[in-house]
Length: 344
Length: 237
Image (tube, rainbow over all chains, first blue to last red; front, side, top):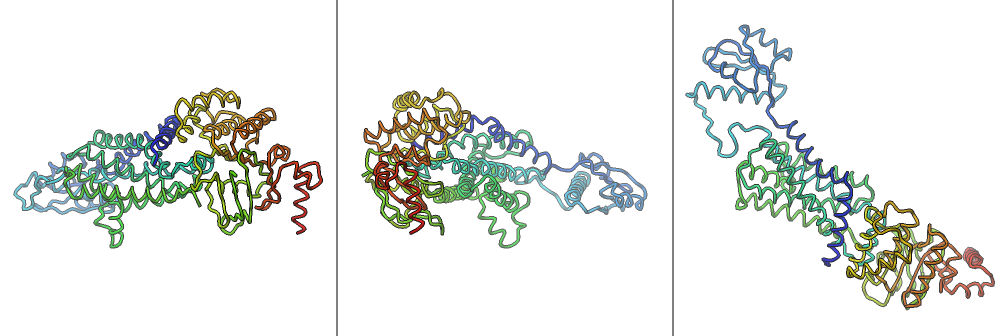
């Protein structure tokens, strides 16, 4: 391993990246746009939900105050149900004196859950003598939203995805235009080429991870109970591991088109099997085990735990995540070095 | 002897490219590999560079045991093999650093190469140069670290006649100082300026001698005729 040569390769690559303004803008702006879109589109609580109340009940005035619901009071149950049937409202809440009956349009489960939550909260407020009491949560917020679950996963996805995209193209051009051969002819080792590229791209990763964490915490106001530095370190490590995987893919791709084709089958399993959109606990047997092999599963759960639970490095989940993500990157890097062989 | 190859066999998968090839290159000489495209010239260079492992045969380059001769070799591939987004100065600095040259040495050699190869202003971006200018920068990269062995794949394609003559003059000068040069070409007149010509066809050397000896031996007054005669004989055999 010759550090002079690695330095030369890193600074050359960095000069190329810096000179390409459009690409530079792309790699800093895209993660920002991505996380902004996710934050606005998914996970926030639905609002302006039309709900019809029938009769009189102490919680109805409470429901009128709700920020999510728009209540209409009807006296006729049949007329109210017709409104739900026609899609004008999501639910009818019928008062039978002391108890309540809800007739739902259950075609949208998220909206149904939201309405149930609102009714339950109203019940707690107006009739505290009820036998069910929800105390202040041990982790997270009592007004917890779906976005609080989703955001840490999306941050992991964005850090992972853009690091892969950044590096999959790395060697495609250099192999075809002969520049890589020239390096090898000069006696440069594949590992030196790889480390040089990693070093150059690291500047970008630092920027990307900062932007992603910054937007999540500042724009979307996702709770942050743990150490920002710890979160940043794990994000950075994940970015590096993803770059190593990207470099490996790059050694296999013979054209830009192939490189793109290799990225897609990685992104989807990561998105669907890492507990980013839905809890891993819901996966069927087999897929759950596979999910535990993905570094993103560990990173997503750790991001969530650092942000919501405020866990630190001493927690087994967190330190295991660091080890697993690191190991994944190391294996990918070794595979890349083996695949980028000079002699054949 | 700078390069000694005997009984070399190498292909890609089932395709046989080089077969029972023998080649001898003297130290401090210019060796011209002449042959039609697709005859295996570039594959042969890749074997000499250590990129391709021979299936059969002996190969010795510069008497080193290393698989890749490294800084002892200056290599200019057929493609330009330049980073189009760097300027000329950065290009030379980059390659100089790979060969662990000092900053001062890189600057010194850069100055000399600029005047010799008539390179454009060093702040120009390589991607914006003309084809001939790029070719010269590519050559400058191969010459930069004063290697013992120069491997040039079609070095004079797209270079005007005046500069081509100057390049040959320079190659002659450094050969006289002990540098060994192997170049591929399909310009027959150009091969005539080499000390030894390897006539290559279908992955084998049909003949390997000085251009004058070749013409004498086959009683003709051009290398072209020699090549055609040898090809015919090969077909008959």
